[in-house]
Length: 121
Image: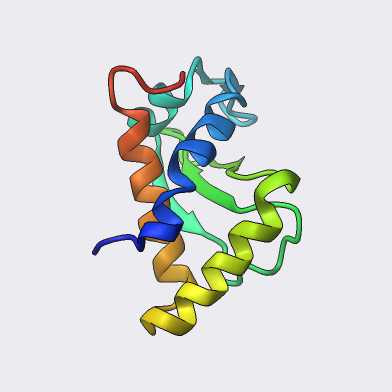
């Protein structure tokens, strides 16, 4: 499913914000993900919180470490949060798609960008 253009514009920013959080370590098994690309390849995407408004500070993505433990990653920051959620809410109304559906597509686009050779690590 295609991500609306206005949301697609956030993908590079969100990818860079995610990449800046590494290295990241699993609190359960101690596995270290040295960069965002390793994290995308080495963990299973579980999606995002079903109510995107539950966390006013960020978009949280959930992934499973190979040990089965859930690891969260904050995919946005206060600088873009308000604008992002306004655009998301507008796209929900215009497209008729759910916020969760749009967020899942956005996270897949972020994962895809993270796997590109010149992507932020």
